[in-house]
Structure formats: C-alpha cells, structure tokens
Length: 462
Image (cartoon, rainbow, N blue to C red):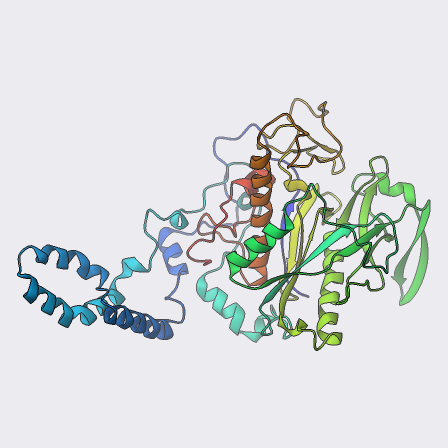
C-alpha cells in the first residue's frame, strides 16, 4: 500500500498545562550534533563544488571580489597608493574568490537563523511529539528514499518526470444538471482566495500550478440506503437506516455521498461513491479522507491512461482542496489533510482553519462562528454551549462582524490555509515530519500547535 502522511486533529489542548510535558516515551530528541549531521554533505557535493567554483570564477571576472577579501581590501586601501592597489587586487581577485569554497559559515545556518532553532519540548499533552514517536528524516534518508527502489515508497508512474502541480477544488453541489459544465458550483465566498493559494504554491515551490475544473459533491437525503459489502467473495446487499448517521462518530453509507470528477472539457465523469458521516439536524457532513484519496488516486491514474495528448503526462501530483469537513477514524473530531505519497495525491480541508470558528472539543458537528477572533478555535472549558455563534461562516470581506479587522482575518485564513497546503505538498515531494528544527514540516496534534508552527522549511528540509 502507498504510504500516507496526515495531519490529524482529534481533540483540543488542555487549558491547564503541566509544568513539564515529556516527549513520547519512544521518541528521542536529536542532539545538536545529530541535527548538524542531518544536514549531510552539501547536496550532490561533487557537482555542487563545480557549480560553486564556476559561479565564483564568474563573479571574479565581473569584478566582484571574495566576501572574505572584502574587508581586507578595504583595510589596505588607506595604506597603499591607488594605482598599485588596483593592480594587485585585479591580479588576485579570481584566486581570492575561490577561497570562499572553504568558508563553511557561508553554507551552514548561523545562530541568528530561525531555521536553526531546535524543536521545542511539548507544551501540552496532546502536542504531536508527546503522542507520536517520530523517527525523523536526515538528508541522506531523503536521498535513499528517492533512489532506492526496494523502499516501495514511490510507484513508477508517481515518480515520473511530471513537474506541474494540479489543484482540484471539491465543491458541494446541491442540485442541477450533473453533466452540465455551465452550472458548475463556485468556490465558497467564505473560503480563502483560491487565486492567492495558487500563486502562493507557485512561488513557494517554483513550479507551474494549474487549477482543474471543480469536482462536484452530491449528498443524498433518502430515508434508507443500501450499502454493498463483500462476504465470502459475494456481494451482499445490506439495509442501512439513515437515522444511524445522526449519531456522532457513526458512519454513513457510501451511497450517501457521490463525487463527480471533471473531464478535460469541463464536463463530469460518472459518479463515484465516497464514505462519510452526517448530522441530520444541522445538515453537516464529514467525508472519510482515505476513501476520498482512493478515488482521487484512481482519477489521477486514469488521466495518464486515457488522456494522452492533453499534457497530463506533465502532472506531478493532484491535490484536492475543499471547504467540506474531513475525518479519518470514528473518534476523530476532524482531519485537516492527508497525502498518499506513493500515488502523488493529497486532499485537505480548510473548514476548521476559518479564523472565526469555535468548535466543541468532542462532538464533530457542534461548531459555530463568532464575530471576533481570539486565536483559539475551541469552546472555553467553562462554557461548552456558548451563545451568539452563527451556524454559517461570515464573509471575511464583508461587514458582518463587529471587528474592523476583516483584512487581518482574511490574511490569517490565507496564512493558515497556505501553510497546510505547502505542508501536505512537502509530503508528496518525499519529506517526512521534521523533528530537528522549528519547521513547516513539523507534525502537529491540534490547531493551537498547528497555528504556531512556522511557514518556512528549516535548513535540513530545504
């Protein structure tokens, strides 16, 4: 099976913190020496030396002296006559520039660099490294991952020469003609700007990013449904009471949720069934993330197999983005995102990243939206039934809330969403969770920890 990486949110951090929160008993925090060794040799050392030498020769020919020689030359300017000094510098300039090859401080993060800050100890019992014994990944581990076939991590097609990043919006469609591309649902106005997400991804990874036509999600509301299961090799039809999916944590029949993937011309493919759960009283749903990824993986392979001539062989990955809620297991509060690294597909939801959302710590379908943002997305411990919350998210660009900081809310929503997107895409490029430094690739166990993680890669992951 393909490996999966995920950011799983189960509950909320505790407000009363213990004085000392230990790492997971099987996790060993890397020492300073281990963190330095994790950087490895400069990537492709033999080639890198040649390219750096060529670069320094080029800078010398342009009259740009060595960084190490700059201060020395400045000090000599006052003690020598201009003509002699200029001739001396011109003769030695190329040799001085080559000395930079041996200056390690130019290639190792300094103490002032934020990327050299070690991963902090857990601040809450639900922090990621307090729960998960991560092994970490050095640069040599990453090279082994990409070059060793026996690892089984990368499938031949998934590890092809494609470089384009494809974003696939998944939008709930409450009606209309499923075969018409003229009635396609639009990206929700209360979501982060999809155009800015595309631009952020393009700049961050320096790759072409293309927005695919939206996939349509249809949710049926029949009184009872049929689900298909396999028993001793035979397909058996079972009746499922629709009311059972109203129980928090219960699964709905796959037939309740149908997804229509787009074709190249904008029309829709035949529907596929997705597992999920729903709360009938609020009409709130959650899609099971691995079920969605299975179908997304099949869709990606079908694009390569049946759509030749459309440039789909250049696709590096397909990432589903949605404002619909996701979950992984029955007890989960929600799941923010997951990636199948071997299949080069990922999906993530921005639903719980809205800066004004407030949610119950145990029941996935109990949440609302406040009028102000305090940076904390959960109900307070002493008020598990807060008043004044709106069941629907406000438009961040509107005047629906009391605060005058709509632009600040919108920026925060975009920051959170773009960080989630780039984190999951990092997994598709083969990066595991980082244990060495404060880094974009840190694992997070809850929203508070997630929001305080940085948006940049550390020196090792970079």
